[in-house]
Length: 192
Image (cartoon, rainbow, N blue to C red):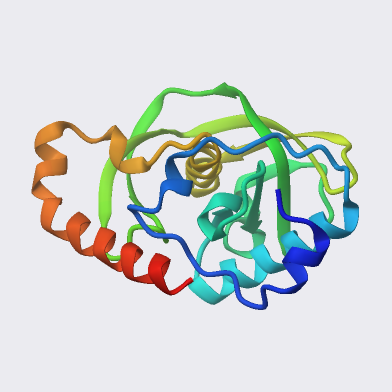
């Protein structure tokens, strides 16, 4: 785990792409042992989410190894019910799904898979528990696009990729695009 000193030395968090092993490695529970480190990390994650144009972002998508995800609530404000007051950003730490409705077919993309949009099943509505930045337990109900985003980011934290929901034949269809993204990941990884 990075220390506050390590995080301050890293001015820009690079987006991690398909092929980077951190995306398939489950993240560790956040222990709240260094509030300064956590606040710096969250700030960098929010900056990255806005820079890369995401609705949400999981920690491992920008190289962190703990269970933190952030969401831009301006894009989903009518689709969430819960007790949070963080301006336009919802921070979920150690999130877990607690309930979900029947899945519906949705179109989904991912910042770590540029240029790939797929149709997969996601719950129309979910309830999730999480901790806020102070470690206080919270619960939200999310619907529609926000439900989709919550599921997507929690799966990232578990080391799961959205393309794993596709059949072998569907993944074969994307083979060329995936190869290009993996090559991009290797090029970025070498430069880091």
